Image: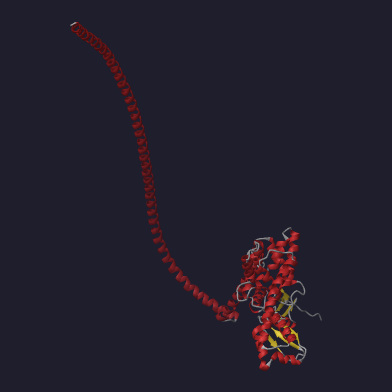
Length: 524
């Protein structure tokens, strides 16, 4: 019972408390909500204000950008308009100038037409006058010619012939003088070019020269041995000649057999082989071929040794094996009787001495001097000047560029690039020109001098010719009545050209034409 009463009292009180608390919470929430709303409204207003401010700023910036862009476009448009306007003005000026020129030309053409018409009239009048004067002049000339023929005792044709002869003689004199002046000027202005052309011309017209010493003599013990060398029906000698390429001459010369060939190497192979066959005594075709082949191999090895010894003798080193082999081959080459290897060694020493005196590398100079004629050892089937062949050979086997240039330029086939090349050229000339360096047989020497004198005598107006200085100069005495001073100069040039075309000779030949006038009187 009491418990129910308590419940009845507690429940209303609890409900009242809940209502009161709810009311208080509602009142509190209402006040807080009003404050939040006010705060939110203020924030919203601030955001709106900031947004409007930012929008205004953006708007101003965009307006400025648009304005700048508009100004830029306007400036470009104005510039383009101004340029076009300027072009139009220029075109207008040009058109105006052209119109002025056209008007001036038109006036000038009209003026020329008037002048031409007037000139035609004047010419027609003058033509009539000239025709009349020509007729009168022809009559006067005819009368004058008749008087001249009577006075001179010559017909018109005879007088024309005399005049033509005089004019031809004068023209010849003038042309000779002109040629002389041109040649003198060419000597002064282009000496180097003239030398190159002369050397090139000599090379193009040069032919192979044979050496007088083209035979070797092999001693035999008796005449019976000659018969064994010939063999039955000549089979031994034919086999020997076929294997060596050498002519074997067995004649009445006592205890001697002669071997003849232009190739010194083949002749040396034949000489050594024949001596071995004679010493061995067994002479038949099979043995001949065996001995010759063996001798050829031995001499080929000796060629390499000669090349190596030459480099050692000169204190040189580092050469390619092929270069050494070609140097060894020089031993079996000659020019005008001068052994090519000895000549090359002499040129090497001379070049080295000259280089040392002038402060250049003596070793390099000696190398260039030794190899300067190496092109002469190349097979004759290869065409071209020996200097250029040597140039290609030394270049192929990696010789020094100065050496290569000196080899190719010592006859001026190519341009000299270093002073050593000039030293090689000078040493080559010294070695070939010194007394006794090169020889020529007496018969060939006399024959060459006779040919030289006869060639000079073949020209019209030549009285006497004398070959002097061992054929290096030809003196031509002309008939002074038929050859004047101008013709003498031309005659010297013609003789020199004829010598170059028709004769073979070492070095150069000087042509001297002598025209002397002698006046004789007698006192009685």
